[in-house]
Amino acid sequence: MPLLPAQQPQLIRSSQKDEFYQNCLRNQANEAVQSLAGKIQEVAGVEEGGGAAVGSGVLWVNNLVCTLEQGYQTLGEEYVSIIQVDPSKRRVPSRTRRVVLILLHTFVPYLLDKALICLENELQAEGLESRAGWSEATRSWNPVSYLRAQMRRAVRLLTEEQKKALLPAVLVLQQGVTLLHRFHVAFFYINGAFYHLAKRAAGISYLRVQGEAGESLMIRTSYKVLGVVSLLQLALTLTLQLNNFRQRRRAREEWKLHRNLPSR
Image (cartoon, rainbow, N blue to C red):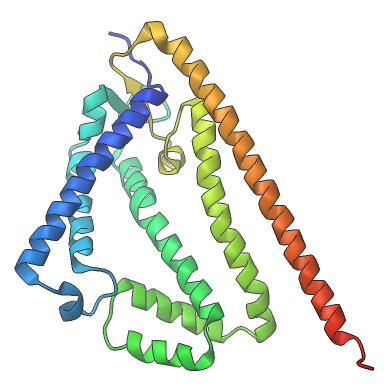
């Protein structure tokens, strides 16, 4: 049986099915930890709930067993009869490529989000609050507190002018990440190759074993229309945000000019 490229419906249903089982596994892990250990957050001194951390660890082991060690299909992939392939479309992804996929899909987004939030908080924090946060973070170690400590050290090396210039850049970068994800989803609706940025970066696509061949053209057309509408909505959102940014900058310049005028 010839294998055909997986289309948008199969990829979306597969992702939704995987997310459903991951949420069930996470909830069960959280309930087990809370029933056995009680208040993990107070005992361990971590900022995020211990149940959530253990749940994420269980999910991480599950990903390793299913996609890294054995190269099996996930439950969602098996549900819609699709398989992962490398850019050659002839072989399953290598172990190295699957490791890159897991890192890009789990750790990189988490670390990037935490790093931007920590940097924004440190740039906005006052000196007294920053020192208090430093003493609190050094009482116990966890990845988030370590990241915050490194951000605090880096921010201390900046001047006030550099801090004021860096804060808008961080906010723009946060918005840019969100807009990039929205653009990628819209492009997926049109192109239909990669549903996640991590799979595009790792070069992992899908082939389907079976599917509705008679409805392929109609399905692709409907998703392309949805993709065009999503791009138009994204362009409108970006235009409004740029206009709002220009208005705020103009108001800031007018306020500075008015403040510098000599008083009579």
